[in-house]
Image (cartoon, rainbow, N blue to C red; front, side, top):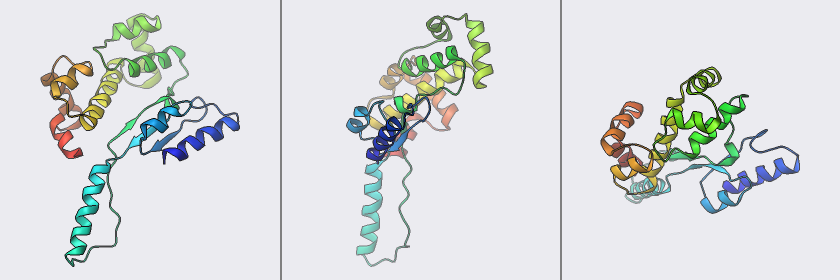
Length: 198
């Protein structure tokens, strides 16, 4: 399905539409090579293929044992969205705030504070906070946490790294602090989230 996303990007180019400024494009399957070769790189929804395989095998096993199975499809929730440049749009006309959003998403793998963002875009902290809230309806810190927690979820799904290592790779001081923030945001521990995705 990422191939279809690539076709959409190419069709936009032929029609003179700018991706992502005029049209945002997201696909399904997260074929890394294909997504990265698109211009701009294609955002994609990652599927849990391993889980789909287990569900299909379980259904097949039931059928082979002669059990009646309902004629329904298997529904597997996607694991996460891999955001790339094809959806890198800011829901604001304020160029400084759009730049702040890009900076936050790009730098979410390190300890990041409001002063870092303010310095990057050339605004005072107070001005940044006021403009950010006016443009997006939430705080800069909320946006930083969202970006960092998205990275945490991706690492929990895609790696077998220890929680402490993921914490430091995503800008948190340690695994315990990450666990507290993660539980508050998602209602479960990072380890619980990881186990549910397997």
